[in-house]
Length: 553
Image (cartoon, rainbow, N blue to C red; front, side):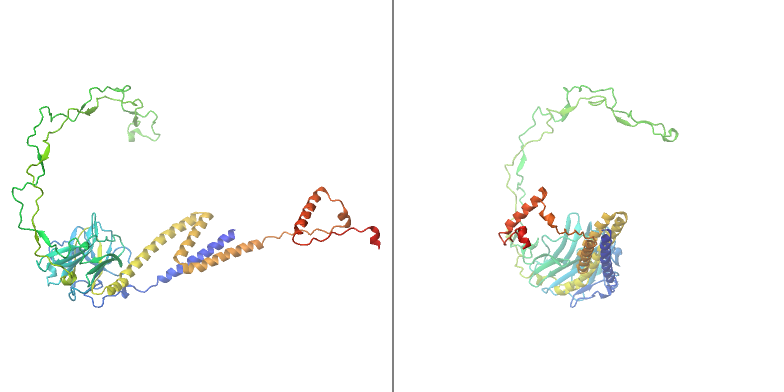
């Protein structure tokens, strides 16, 4: 049995060695950063932050952007999925940031439009914006950008308190009135608030349908022409309140008023206290007014190491006085509700006889109304991207791989080559750290445990390795069971065979001897067997004993 255990352990260690060799082979991968794509064919804008941002990104000079000095071009903290890769990091707290970069060419309204970027957090967001603003291509100077600077799309996460959403706001100009309105997406998806890199993608198609992806998985879809998808629909209402209609000065819209004829009763005492002393209460029986509530613990003794000179005079600790089961010390009458208490008097409310109802302005036809059939074609062209956000805490929000293009498939391929590679490697690294910690804990347990602990842990190792590497583990597992089988067969062959001596032939005298009582029973059973056997096969006749004379003949 002991030898079997060591063979099993050897098989498991062999499996562990094979897996370790596979892991070591993975460690010799080429430099991932050098294989990262730097552009998307036909795009309006691509920023991987592989090159210095000076001269390409413009920091606003507006005084509100106190965090611009805390903008760094650096790698994210913690696990690095692509070592050496950097992004645009916001490294200050309780500050506003304003930095932008121009496009190589403005977008084409009505054509498919895709916005995508990666976001990685040093720590989970408590209160901060992490979205992008796509500014109008109106030639405005980026160094003069402010919070109110016109944009076409605002897209990305925003988290503060109970607010947790991925913003999608389209700023649209009404053709008739010339007025801009912000159209907020209804029920937007929530952001991914953890330390892994996440990919946010928005696509607006030529047919006015849109879709939001998080980590290349669809999180929200709809249409610009659907009133159900937007808090403010793109098509204005047909009727509006008349802006010239004002509520008359004599309009009474108070439904209830205090009764002007009511007066305070003469016996109403506003100064009466809410509670008074219960005059009928008496001190409970057993209440000891002389006894203290606390006494020195009679069971306490002075510690042997107590030094009066250093520790001061020793005093026993105070404990509850057992004589105070009912109560001790001075007794006072309890308080009770005052039956004469009425509080401040106020006149009762009555229906206002002059009430005219809730005033509403007259409804008129909306002069700015028209059916917006193709809003995507009338969005203002986009000429730059901006990080214009407020960050309360924590710091360490990193933007990377920003793309604006006209092909969803091309942008998704770019995301697969950048974000997907990064997140998969980070997950693998985190898993490796977890495995390393578990391995250290297991080795400690194996070193301090007995045989049963070792059997239990090695069994767990088999299950874990089989699940993680089935193509390696399955052959080893077959070998493992084959060895078990061989060991068991070998143990059976090692046992000494037990031989029974053959019965000697009976002599004539033993045959003719009268059987004992014990021998009669088997004979009877044999007879029964003969009778049963007679049903299926012919019973051989018994030999008849010949007379002595016949034998001689």
